[in-house]
Each structure stands twice: as structure tokens, then as C-alpha cells.
Length: 100
Image 1: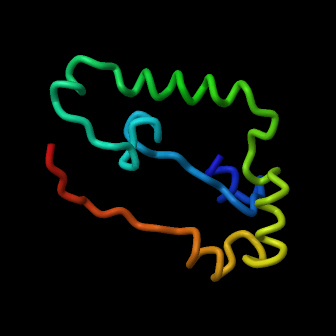
Image 2 (image 1 turned 45 degrees about the horizontal axis):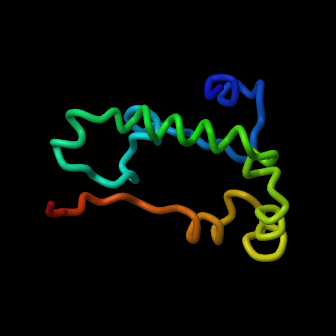
């Protein structure tokens, strides 16, 4: 897809890429679990199953089709990729310590 965009064959106003290890199901935003849980429980599989089950039950599955998201852009953020949208919606991740 990115090659097609670079070559000018495709145009998108917004591209979301999920590049978390194991997909975002197992990405950095997930709560950390102690080793005795991680070693004996398929957390990634359980999370994936829960997400697929939840997704099957909804009719609105794409954020860019959500009327509320469209309204927020129209009334507040402007267009996707605007400076305001970038400032409010983008984040960065930092390693945080935790105790069990």
C-alpha cells in the first residue's frame, strides 16, 4: 500500500498503521502482567478473541465512517492531519516502571 502511495497510484488522506509486536493486541498499551501469568496464559490469544467477538457485534466498524468522528473534525479539528488534530491526537510512548 505504501509503495502505491509513493508511486502516486493511490491517495489517502489518512493511513493508520498498526505495528505493535503481535499486533496492537499485544502492544505497548496493554497492561503488563507478571511472569507467572505470561508464561502459562495465552494473553495475546485471549485479547484477540475478545476483540474479534466484540467486532462481530458492531455495525460501525471503521472510525472514519463514524458520524461523531466526522462531527469532531468538522466542528473542531478541521481536516485529518491538521496541526490541531496532530497536536491533540498524537502521542509518544515512554517506558514506565511498575511493581508487582
